[in-house]
Image (cartoon, rainbow, N blue to C red):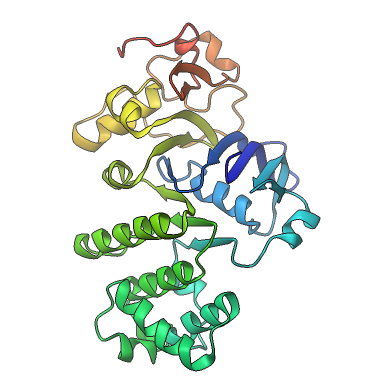
Length: 314
């Protein structure tokens, strides 16, 4: 049994017949880093918010199952049974996620007091140490500062320190290094990996940075328009991408993409593949929703071109 199992997840806007997330299915094993990639608006963050139970007002869970260590979280009873430190999240907008009335060090210390039972004095000492571990120079000084007195990158590191102090079963990292320079990025990646090795937690790593995916992830889920396009191990995905959208993403990283792939935004009203209005290989069958076809060992692609198994990229 996987640590996190998400099955048939459907999420929509209240009062709208269209789904923002449609039949999203993935799992995360203990000690594994699963990447979710895709361009902005692909549903990566929405899926993570559904997992942690923090969907925005007006957005509702329409169906599906979310299990953490076998406990169903997609209902109020299961969510209430989950421990407060079972899932921790590094948010994409750290300044808005931090308490503006509380000093940075105190916010980290409260996590340690609540989840690890440390005394106030010990929690303060460990909080400053956590701030040092995430690459904050002058951690003593920063611990005394309020979020509005810190840069965006510094707030991001405070948020990462809080998330890791929980020692969670599942860590959700939503673009955790967006505001950080490459040196600090490398430190954060090492910290996340050390947390995985130390306590065996699973990590849901959300990003649009394919270089970060290649460095951090064991397996990858590719999303577009609230649908899963492809699931694979990191080596298979980078060496043998099967879905046209995955190939488009990889091509976009190092060369000019096919001019026919026009960026016209997601059409959530499409009943079939939501990439079909941009796909140069779209055909009549794409008006229906394609299932995830197996195209290799633990490698699936939601494209009718893959119906008969692996095909050569065209």
